[in-house]
Image (cartoon, rainbow, N blue to C red; front, top):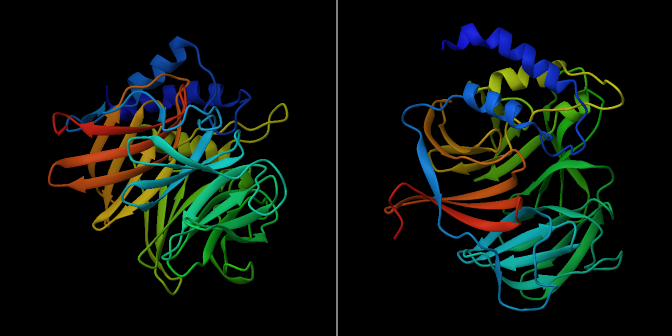
Amino acid sequence: MNKIAYSVGFCAFLFTALSTNCSNPDAEGKYSTKEFRAILQQDLLPATAKRLFSESSEPSQESNDSAYKLSDPSYMEMVSVDEIYVTDAQERALFCLNTKGVILKRIGRYGQGPGEFSQPIYIAADGLKRVYVFDGGNQRISLFDTKSGFLSAFRAFGPCHSLDVDNLGACYIAFYGNDPSAPLIEIFNNTGSKIGQLGSRLSATSPGSFNDVDICVSDGRVYIAWKTYPLIRRYDPAGGLEFEHKLDFGLMREFGDLNRTAGKKDGGVRFWRVITKIRATLDGYYIMRTFPRLELIKVDFLGNIKEVYWKDIGPDYLAFDFFVEEGRNGTRFLVLENQPEPRLCRYYVGDILR
């Protein structure tokens, strides 16, 4: 069916669904089987899309201690080839895993003291492998050395959409806020002093929630992806805008346009997740979508979609972060999954498993 032919009628269906409250702001909500299948059938894949297969299916751990488990994993940071740090808001801890998903150690516990957490969510690392954790409950960013442990902390008031850190330790934070004139990104040094700002917000009916963005800092450049709209920006080290890509893939454009005009109804706004995460590579960047299927999409610096990797999932699936490995043996992905089972899963493409 021609995309133009179905888009008007199907957008009416999406608008009706969008008007319903969503109990989980990080998910698209719960759907009937009929609703989910209708969306899946309209969100078309290109003929060249490559299917993903799971290399590991069970979460694992080195210890039988019940404290060594993932319950509500959110984001991760790779600080070495086989050392990945994962935040877990429910466990109120930071976990170190290897690339097979085996938990090596746990850092932190519930509390307000040094090295303790209330709601650890976002995580990043600088060039010295110091790990930065945004703790929403304690409203602060805590710094850790991967060998010696807790180093310091500074206040970060207000809810946050995303965090990343450059090699020198400058923190790029996207704070939530309804002021359309506020900067999109605020920049702090690793002691908490503000040293700059970056970018402008998009106008929308509900600007605070709509300007939910993900940040990726790579080689001095800052990539910003709107989670609610198919827009990618890249800024140079001086803060100048290098490019802006509005992607048109599947139902991303339809979801984004609905999000931009979504207003409050019965006390809440329901947004469709268009982009979940962005990661930069040498020749472009990848974005991850998690609805209505898991998709990892490679885009070049001109905004052209070069590869699409996919896997069928269910309506209850949640994943927030990934890493990509491009090598001679093909492309692999590490995906941090939250539901239906919390785990770090390795995916490979087609028959490249070695």
